[in-house]
Image 1 (tube, rainbow, N blue to C red):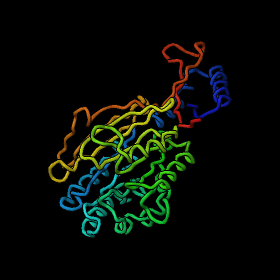
Image 2: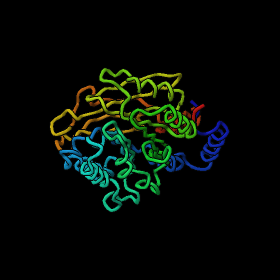
Image 3: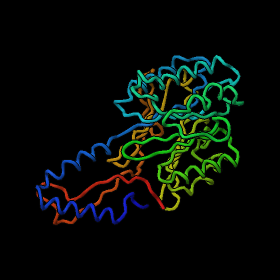
Length: 340
């Protein structure tokens, strides 16, 4: 892994620190460094919605409660992106179900309640229950997202496969949303996207990747085999299988996590359970939680709440002669995710 600034840039920065130390007290030099670090150290959150088909069919108020909770907690949790991993509706031909789903997701788009011109960034894709995708594209097509700053684009002429871009914690991200049962051409498109955006940390979302025992399904094997050589890929998210599971795969010098979450077998079509991924750059970890806004309760078993180590921040130590009493002799900087 190569850090995002060159050896020359670091040497120059170190020289400036030395000159500043000569000219002024170290404490006054430290203030802007701390102020900058506070901005880049902020924890941020990605929320995952999965398999909402029962809500769209029979419990639309639970679906709305999920997205309303996201909006209410956007600032408190610093929610920067929302993922929907497919099976938006139960019956693809039912316009009533699509209307319910559209109304729930529209809550994320309201600039007045979210305080954001484009709403809270989110990505969505069709699961098996959303095929054929005629209605999916009527309600969640390119025109719904075109012009939103976070929308990166799509594959082909529809929005079955699309991607989003966002920044958080001083890091750039790409989220690639891939339809259920993609063709080889679609996987090649996703692979090319990750390569073209190799300076962005990458998340891939599709409906089916993992089985209940945390093994890759046949489709999951295709995803991993095709995409694993992209060192910026660190996370894959999926639903489809009615349980929770996760795995970690080491490829070369980096790790790819794959997380499965699907709560549709719970009472009331899923009881409002959703996934919360809290990224903590200062601690280099992703804290995974499972919460229901309708029950106001967390699931705390080992498959529902756990922590994943993930390097977001590098620490560089200055020579000991630069240290001062009561001041640690190091400078911390975000690893911006430029790999080779």
